[in-house]
Figure (cartoon, rainbow, N blue to C red):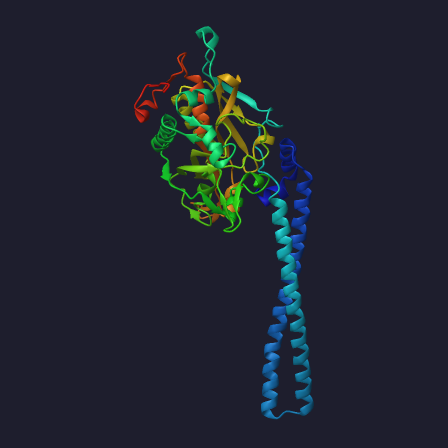
Length: 443
C-alpha cells in the first residue's frame, strides 16, 4: 500500500495519480476521513486507559489505609468511609475497564476501516508516466525490422499451424483433458520451452541473480501483500478447502520470501530469479487470443525480483529492462519498448515498461516481457524493512520485478518470425546449444 504519511502530506499528488489511472480520486478523501476517525478513536482509547491506570493507582494506597485502619481497630465510621471510597473506586475502575475495552475495539475497527480504504488506492505513479489506458502508452524505442515475407515470396503461417506441422503443439488434446486455453507442448515444443527457461536462468545467473525454487501455492496474506487480491482477485485460482492461491507469477512467492524481515542492504540489492509454473484464470479476456498458445491458463515463466533501497529503485528498474532486452535480442526478435500508461499498470506498480515482440501473422507487437517498479508498495504490506547504516532505525525497502521469459509467448514469436518457406523454423543461435539443432524441421 502507499505511504499514509505521504498521502497526508501530499493528497493532491495522490489524487492526480488516481486520475491518471482512471480511478476514483475521492478515495483519497475517504482515507483521510478514516485516518481522522482512527486517530480520534486512538486518542479516546488512550485517554480512557490513562484514567483507568490512575484509578488503579489510587485504589492501591486506599486499600492499604483500609487494612491498616482495620488492623489498628480504628473508629468504625472511618473504616466504613474507607470501604465506601474503595467500593466507589472499584466500581469506577470496572466502568473504566469496560469503557477501555469498548474504545479499544472502536480503535481497532477504525484501523481496519483505514487499512481497507488505503488498500483500494494504487501506487502513486512516477512523473512522466502517460495517463490513460491500454492504448495510451508512450513508445520508447523500436529495435529490429520485421521481415517482409511478401518480398521473400511466401505467406507466413501462424504459430499454431507451424506448431502442428512441427509436432510441437497439440491444442486438441489439451482441450480434451483440461478445457479451453490448455495445451500440450510435444517433442520439440517441450524441448523449446525447456531451452527458453534454461537460457533465461543462464542470463539471470550471469547478471548476478540468485536462483530460487519457489512454492506455487501461497497464503492469502502473501497474495494480498504482493497486490494480487485487490482489483484482480477474480483472475487468480483459489483453493477454498486450504485457503491457498495458485500463483500467476513467481513474483508473488518472491515478494513474500523476506516478509516480516529486516534486511541488510549495505552490500547492495538482493536479486533473485525463479522459474515456476504459473496459473491465470484470464478473467475478462473472453474472446481474446483464443487461437493457439498466446493467452493460456498455465505456462512456465522465469521471473526476476529485486529488494533494494528506495533511492536505488530507478537504477534497478533500468537494469531489469536492460536484461529483458538482452533476452529478446538473444532470441533475434524485432521488438519495441513501451512506457505503459497509468491505467494499465496494475495496483502495485508506479511505472512499468513492456517489451513487445513483432508477431507477423497478427501484424502487431505483442507483450513478451514486462518490468515494474513497485517502490515501497509491496514491502509495506509485507512488512519488509532495512536497517539504516546511519543508525536511523529501519525503513521500508523497495521491490521490483521483471519477466526474463515466459514459455508460450516467445514460442509464438520464434516460430512465426524465424519460419522458412518449407515450414521449417530457424533456431536462434543462443538457443541452439540447448536444443542441439540449428533448424526445426516438419515431421
